[in-house]
Image (cartoon, rainbow, N blue to C red; front, side, top):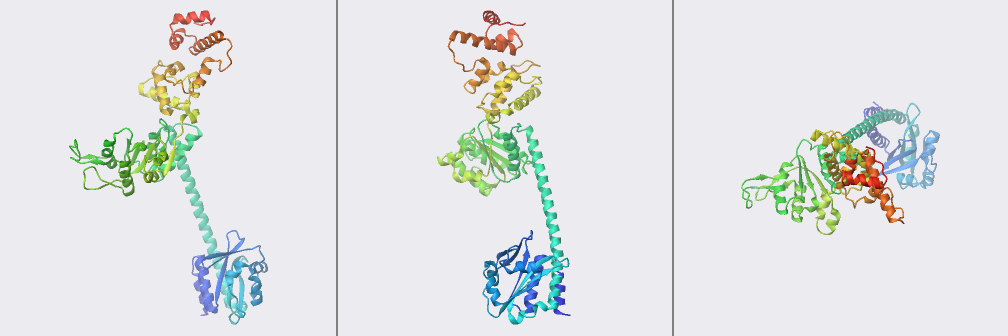
Length: 513
């Protein structure tokens, strides 16, 4: 059996295009006793030919005729370069790197490898002495082997490209499915993290992403923005959801009790410890530990918490044996922890350990368009809990709330709506007079005053007339609000019904009974 026929048989048994080219180089160099053999592969877009030489990728453009490979591609035929021609082409730096130093008795032969469909697959570069290279271009068995190899390479390349396309398609489908799943989960959060504003939509997406990660989550936001709601949502959507969600407010527990609450203790650990007590770290094993207002945690306890996070080990107070707890950590704070680090109030190493996935909650004043939806939600909850039928929020009351700044954020709105519901009769709407007593007059008061008074900031030159206009506007506006009901109007203004009647007569305000 011809050695080239044997080589061709070995080559067609290979099922990987990269391995095929490696074997081709090995066989060609051995059988022809050459100094060097290189293979140039076409890039995916067909615009370049590439060769890995000494772990460095060399690249030649198909459209650049400052190297011999473009001429070979253009002519569809082999090219043999003598010493003088090699010196000329060595001006191309990549070609020079490939061939290296040229001896006067050396040649380079460049052979394009075509498949049966005349499509160029690779370029073979042979480099050796003159004696070895003289008969290569007419070596029929060798050229036949290259033809077989080119056809096999094309077949393998097509198979690999189809597999790659299938893999990319599958990956795209997975990504689309994951995206749909995340969107579905985010939409599901709309019943908990309520609001149609852009910032709330973004927040729900962040919660879904945070839940899918295994990072510690730091929730930052003002008081009343819903930090515990967000922490609970992170837990519910995570892989820890089947285990416990354990929450503790670091600011609400005295310093000397906080450590025992977290770590637990054994009987006799301190005065009053008459029995063993599991700590919250044990309760949170496999689940989520939520540390609210972590900025108020004592420095000494911060060091112990850091050790738990790093080693998943802790020791109950008075115990000799360490216990393990593997939990997801979620923390929250309304203070600037970075400033606390600068001031020495918070450990720098712990800060960077827990600052892995930050979530910043928006103020209610930054998403004021959500007030109506939130108010409706709180009213519905009130009706369900108290078996009541408050019909909603009067449009004038809503207008007032939309101009308010809400220093207490969503929590303030919730308490405000609940207070208004208690002032509202069954089947009626919550009106502005039901909630005005709970509003901070120093917050958003200018907008409320303009709406209530109706004279804004115009220049006053007649004080007596301005006072009369002011009083007339208030009474008229309140009468309209209560559809002319004098009793409700008088009650809302804090004056007797008779006094209201006198003022209406004096100010020439018509009251419709």
